[in-house]
Image (cartoon, rainbow, N blue to C red; front, side, top):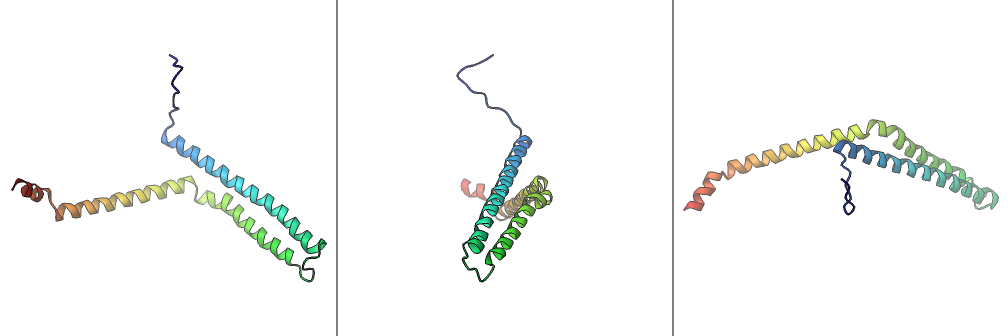
Length: 130
């Protein structure tokens, strides 16, 4: 039966939601890398033109050093997006999250045991009764 006033929310389970978030994050990473690459190409051309054609600081080839340093940063960025992601991808993040949650639960249980031994409920109830 159709109802015109209400929108039905699509029901997405947790795993599908994580996959969707991971896909969106990967798209943003790749988009930033490609933007960085385009800016690198345009900036490199500008630096070389400023150094060689406009003869700014002509005595020294500073533009080549800047372009090489920037290319190194691009290589690091590319390595981070395509290589590191395989080792530290979605599964690695999930395992780390689960490990941290377990550590937190363990610590909460330890604190709860300390509270129970230091302040047992029977003593508190006796104080209330008196």
